[in-house]
Each structure stands twice: as C-alpha cells, then as structure tokens.
Length: 310
Image (cartoon, rainbow, N blue to C red; front, side, top):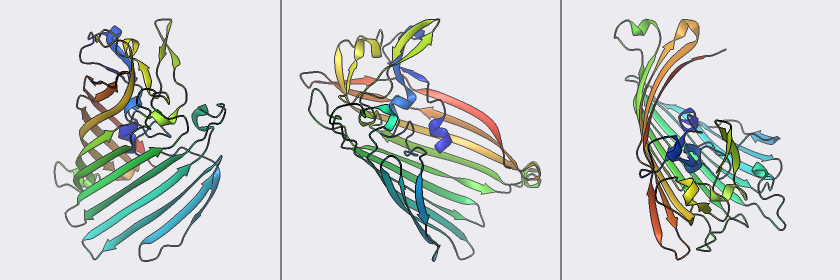
C-alpha cells in the first residue's frame, strides 16, 4: 500500500477542460492532492528523524511503543499480532504523533511568531484464513493542523481534516495451477481507497519550485501554501478558470488489482499492479466565497518489478 501511494508522485494532472497536450498540464501533481501534512504520502505520514524510542515486551499479542524525535515530535503506538486457533492470523495497530517541529520542510520556521502544530493518527488491521489463504486488510490515516499560519485567505478558516482509507482483499497461498506451487506462494488481490482533502495546506508556509521543461524554467506548485491561495490561470492552463482562488477541498478515488509470485529458491518476488484513478476533484472558492469545482482527468497506471530479500 505504501509503495502504491508513492508510485508516480510527480505525475502532473490536467483539468478536464484543458487542452490534451503538454501545455494543458496542471501545476498540480498527483502527490499534491494525496498527501499528509507532514510528508508526500497519504498513509505513511511521518518522515525519518533522529530520536529515542521504547518498545515494550509482547503480552498476549499486544505491544506498545513510544518515542521522542528531533526537533520536537513525539508519538505512541499500540500493536497486536496473534494466531487465533489454527485457522486465523490477525494483526493490527494504531498510532498517534504530535508534530511541533517548526523546521519541517523548511516552511514557516523563518516566519516571525510562527508555531507548528500537527496531529496525526494512523492505523491498520488485517485477518487471514490460513487454510484457504483468503485475507482482508484495511487502513486509515487522519491529519489535522493547527499551524499558526494555516488559515484560508478568503474564508478565514483552517484547512479541513485530511483523511484517507484503504481496503484490500485477496488470497495468498500455493496455487495448484501451472506448477506455481513449486515456486512458492501466489498472492492475488484487489483494493479500493479514497483520499479526502489531501492538498496539504498546512504543510507549507511557502510554495513554488522551478521545474525545467525544454530548457524553460516553469514555477510549479508544491503543496498548497498556508493561506490556500492559488493562481488558477497558471495552475489549470487553458481550462477557462482564471483568477485567484482558495483551495478548500479535494477527493481522490482509486481501485487496483495486483498479483505477486514468490520465487522461494531465489528469495525473490515478482509483482504486477494495475491502478485506476477516477477523476479527482478540487473544490475552490473565490473572494466572494462562491464555490468552483475543478474536475481533473483520471489516469491509469501499470507497473511491474521484482524484489530480492537479502
């Protein structure tokens, strides 16, 4: 799930009414509408940091952990993993993090009086029937920001709470087809997910970075700036949406089918993934608080590869 969400993060989107060529590409990328406030991912929100942490011993399948990390972040988690009898394997976890690091993504830390304050929740759970190999997996991600500068310029409100969910269902076992059982376990599964308000207004006090196309530097938006304002004329070229707007919402729906084949003797896995992204939507308001929905083109993604475990 983590790899799927990070795949194609720099893929530029396009408004449905924009020209179907390079000149019609939006300045918004896939990761700009599908991210936590802290990182460019929807389900793994925290980035790597130096710190100290404690993991408890396991008791009846439960374990707990707590940590404090630079520059100013703490978090805690509760996990569970156990076999229920001879037929079921169950696992799950839930975690919380409080982020007060003003230097996050070098945004806001240099502003006078700036205060960072982000709450993150995440969790997942799964159950697998061992005799059949059938399984179900689910995950959720929630972010809320109280950054001192994350206030909409037009509506005077804080960004909406980011939330995302993902559900996967499939089978993992040695298959009696075409001699696959001699290779190792085969996994076949499907998934559906939804990411709401992942435009990350609270993750950055500034925006804009130069991307070069054909030797011409073009300013591309990173995350939506803290005041939520974008120049729709340049953000959605040729779409007939002109002027300055505030981003107040977004939604992405996705489904996928995938397969993974273990090559046990080589300690290797081969995988194939197809994903379909329904037309994402951005919700904008103008200075008079009139709403404008901007449907973006959906897209399809297929990728394949291999993993070797050392």
